[in-house]
Image (cartoon, rainbow, N blue to C red; front, side, top):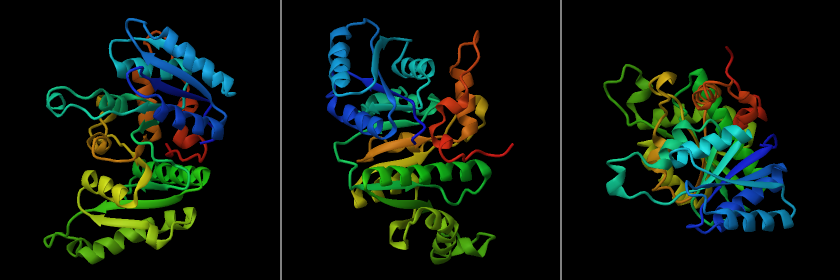
Length: 310
């Protein structure tokens, strides 16, 4: 986390800036990163708004710059700025999507989570991180290299943030329902499935000092259980990951992060494995110029060196 040098902060004059700026300042204080303010504005009407915000932050001692830009859509504008500035983190406030439009059009925040090479922090509440609960949600049943790398990034970042905020780290994983016809007898009983999943999490528990009462293994679908556990714990932040499901060529990622955006009542930090970051940077880079060095934008894996072996 301390390797972040530039943080992209998406601002909107139609939203209260307090939520997103409070998170940005907290992270900048911890990482000493530069804050780059971005207004997605095709008419360039945010000059005064950005100047005032930039001036106030500079007076408080922050290193800050600002721009207003437009590249066809909000998510494309954000990704273009993230790439141009070499930002290791994007911070953006989320507002609930119109359920009618969601059925017809893919929400912009979904597209941002799919295609942004860097980690994305979606700010949803004013609940303070200081002294709060940080929830790391993993898919413990998937143990391939890609998932193991991602799980390491999720839990280690949850640990770092909990330590930074003086909070408490909890960890969770959803597990499937028992299936009597399963070839593996472990998967036939709820008790044996839970025991199996708990065993899978023991390494993380030992490494990041997570006691048994802070490990939550629940039966059901992740997109339902993650918001449920986060709500029950009154989590300030939920850290989750996204992994390619249909091959990198389609830039398709798991949609759990997308599905829980509206139902989750905490902030959410979304991470990706290294190979997806590399591929998305290639997609985001202009064809006439080389893509940025992935290490410059790969926040989850700079600090802990959790990269898959090739």
